[in-house]
Length: 261
Image (cartoon, rainbow, N blue to C red; front, top):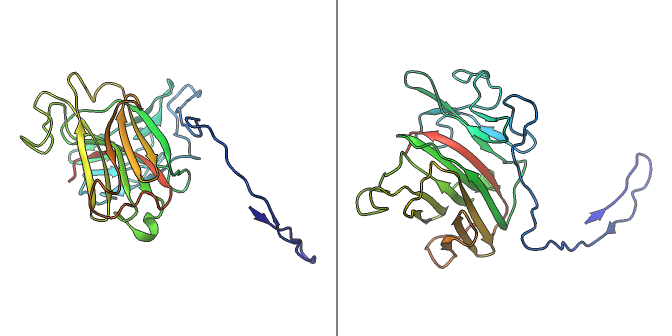
């Protein structure tokens, strides 16, 4: 860190510098949001951490919902029926609603500009809706998306789930056998795409599960329920394309899409 002192009418000081060496033990919790709420009513997610993408098909997947920010009264959003809120038990809800025939609202929360990180382990405990057209996701995008766009910024999908349970992924023969529920983790970059479903006997995405990512230089790993249960590992050599995950921090997204590609 380099610093100077200035004051109107005075000469600036010389430059002072100090070098800091972080000493953080592996596994140290450095950030969390437990969605705690002591108000006695449904409450706004922490605005110091969460902002929102808004609008119709805001994000390029031909989705059907209007994404609504907390407190928005822009039709079809309704501040009396928020699409993202913390309940009094400390659980974050992201709710898709149908205020009129063919009209859907939902929420896409993000930490862009407020919180981001590079390397470490991140996880969320999530219970998913299962129904036709429901597309919940827990994922990350590079902070540099505003300058180099997608997919060059990199996308790390910790968890996605499409439609209801017992849906074969990608059609017969390309995923879990019928009768098995599943979620998926994947990565995306320039000419870089990879990911396979997670499924195991008795697994239900409608139950509470912990979905996590371990991110180190040159490697991304995904797990379900325990960091010892790693089911997928990616490195720059496992897939063709440009590896974007060592170029800078990423921010977090939690959303529930309705329909889309």
